[in-house]
Amino acid sequence: MTAQPGQPAPQDDPERLAAFEERLARGDRVEAGEWMPAQYRFECLRLIQMHANSEIMGALPEREWIPRAPTLARKMQLVAKVQDEVGHGQLLYRVAEDLGKPRPQMIEDLLAGRSKFHNVFHYPAESWADVAIIQVFVDGAAMQTQGSLRSCSYAPYARVLKRICYEEDFHIRLGIDNFKALAEGTPRQRAMLQDALNRWWTPIMHFFGPHDTVSPHLETMMRWRIKVKTNDELRQQFLRQFVPLITEYGVRLPDPGLRWDESGQAYAYTEPDWEEFQRVIRGEGPRSEARLALRNEVWRRHRWVHEALERWPVAA
Ligand SMILES: [Fe+2]
Ligand SMILES: [Fe+2]
Image 1: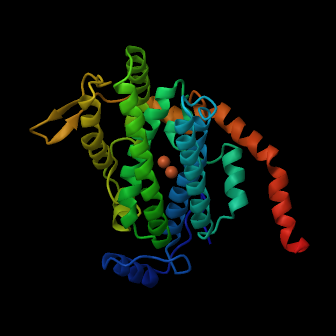
Image 2: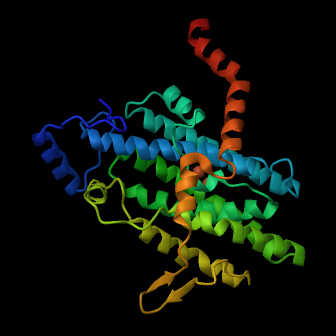
Image 3: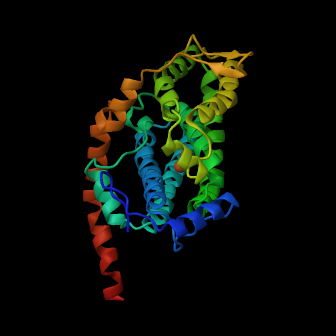
């Protein structure tokens, strides 16, 4: 039975729970058909469903630029990347539905705005440079989280992440090539890149979530390896990987407070506006409504395909 938000989780058998914890402590992984605590099932489902939603909603900002890509080669690369993202969504919904929530219900919840997708996909992609920034920094941020979760305890998710990360790595390389072309381009191209980086910086810093507060919940998530690194660890890992790319190409750092702190062996930065983050993940971001409307419209337009597929076994 799956725990629902706002409802108390069904009580787990203490002996089974102890055996489960012992298994995880030994480094074992959990398969879909095996016994798991109700809260473990709930948290895995929540995480994987949000990831799946984010893949298919994340395809939308870049999709807007397919007809306007500057060259045929860039267009083909972008089409391939957007296809990859939608494919990630398909793989992830399959993994999520094994945890007990039917796929049509997940799609319905997304379309109705009842379930969440990542904050970064609630923002507009205003210029071609936004595509470069998304490919390097948004995919780069996602790679920190997804890369670390390859060692999570839920085996079907860990397996699918291996495949997804291969493709994400390619997206980042593609983005770096795009970023480099603009950074080494005309003054107008450089200005466009700078503007895009400035606008995207806050959502990217938000991506990893607020600072972790030590809580029994966080402790359980880490012990169960549903969370492998803290939000702050992931944010720092991201900064260590990508700040040098910005400075190497002479692009200005978007945050004047961003600097390497030798004594703390970490990046210091200006705290982003966390209220904005809360608004955005509630679905009140600058493009939340438009993106959901587009997703609904696409769903309506393609409904005949779903209906035809549903009838296929009967016809066969
Ligand atoms: Fe993806
Ligand atoms: Fe990607």
